[in-house]
Structure formats: C-alpha cells, structure tokens
Length: 240
Ligand code: G3P
Ligand code: MG
Image (cartoon, rainbow, N blue to C red):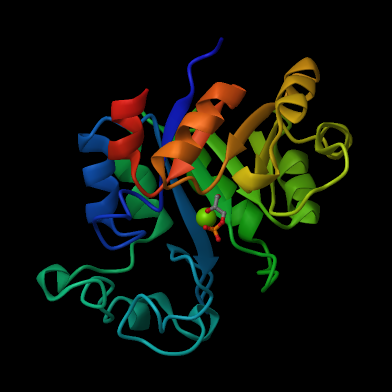
C-alpha cells in the first residue's frame, strides 16, 4: 500500500490563523508532507492567499478582496481575529509563499478560488509564479471550477491538477479522467474503497479534504487514499 501524504489545510490552521505565513511555517516544523493554500486576486491583479472572497471573517477588512489593491490589503491584520496574540500577521501574497517554500522539501497544493468569482487570468498569474520559482514539479493546482482545471492543463500539460468536489459524483474516476486532471479532490465523506481502487486503476490520485478527526483519518488511511488534507497535520502525523 502507498504511503498516505499529510497535507496541512491552510497551514497548521487548527492551531494558528489560517492561510498566514506563521501557519505555513508551523506546518513545516511539525513535518507535514505538503501545504494547501487558497488563491484569490486583488483589484490590481496580484495573487493573494485567503480562503474567503470576503475579508470579514479572517481579517480586519470588510468587503471583497477583488475590490482592494494589494497595497490596501497589506494594511489589514490577518491574525487578530484568531487571537490577540497573533496581532500583526498579514495576508500573504502567493509570491511570498512560493519564495518561502522554494527551498523546502514540500508539496504545494494551490487551490485557485474561482468558482464564486471567476477571476480573469488567475490561472496564468498563478502558473507564472510557479514557474518563476521552478516549482512545477512540486505543485498540484486544484479548483472547484473544472473549466479552470482545463485552462491550467492548457497552460502546461505536465503540471499536476486536481478536481475538487463535495458531492457524490457518479463514477468520479471516469469523470476526472475525461476532464484530464491527475487527481480527485473529494470531500472525504463521499469516498469509498471502490472509488479509490478505480481511481488508482485509472492512474489518478485521491486526495481527500478536510479530515479533522482521528477516526475519520484512520478510515481514510485504511481506504488507501493518497493524501489527507487536514487542519491538524500534527494529529495525522502521529497516526501515520
Ligand atoms: O483544497 C481542499 C479544501 O481546501 C477545499 O475546500 O473550502 O476548505 O477551500 P475549502
Ligand atoms: Mg482550500
């Protein structure tokens, strides 16, 4: 059986403010195999890391990221809402993150957030930065927008891609193969042994999200998934 990889969801986000450089550093410190991050675009076309399209939940800002320039976003605090002790953390840019991980031994799962707002050119902006830091071999680009998966494949046939979904798609291993992606990225509840086996028969990986409790982690390891995306890579690390 293959080794299940341990991917830190938005960094070590169970313990530190999600999608911040601190959460990414801490995830690497505990020895995860990879980091998952969410990519959005600013008004002036910079790729930044934030899960929500809106700033309100995780930062001191309000409204949509797409309505602010990078300079404006840099004035916001992305730590304090998680806890006063995290005051002063900034929204990271994708470039800052890629530069930081470029000399680290880690898988990078870039989730392009473009199923709610279909940001123009986000695939190319993301891909150009991946290329700038020579990270093509370490990256897997995923998105819930499967038209965007196709756009990524068109940019570079060799870049790894994953199709995110949360429902019970019929024979997802056939669908994802037809799409041309390399991996299924399902919400973990929809995964069965048959799906994992048939995906593997089709040369596809199965990388599940977001598995935060031990029992579910054990179940997923037993099903033979390729990677588990979790807010608690520290807990998963002890299990593996
Ligand atoms: O990429 C896995 C997972 O992050 C997808 O859902 O909403 O947490 O970005 P979400
Ligand atoms: Mg995500």
